[in-house]
Length: 145
Image 1 (tube, rainbow, N blue to C red):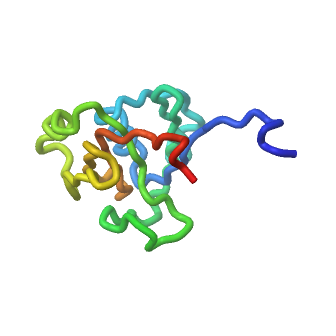
Image 2: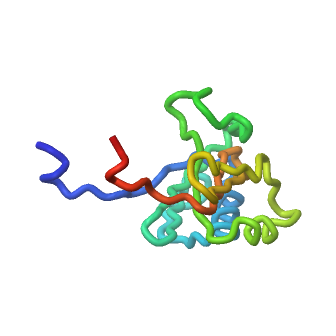
């Protein structure tokens, strides 16, 4: 059976959270997610957040350790490298963050790859690197080998 014969679509990313409330607040405030479902209650509850077709599933894991926002890259195979969002105006987004969220890297320019592509990194409450970019677009399919 191939994927062409089965309808496959994006579902969600599950995140372990030191503090589900803080992580939910971060993604709701800065990225416009809304609650879609809450399963269970107390420390065992799971919160689904939705923005358009993208979902985040938040799991409490207060006994664990926080991630390291400075460790984006191949340092930890098998773990999420980063989450990424697109904005129309990166400077306006950074201005909106002001003193509420620290930009941990950038703004970086990737004009050698895509003219006008700019990116910053911020860190969510659990240390997950969150990339926010302006100007990315897909490559012309005829140019992909």
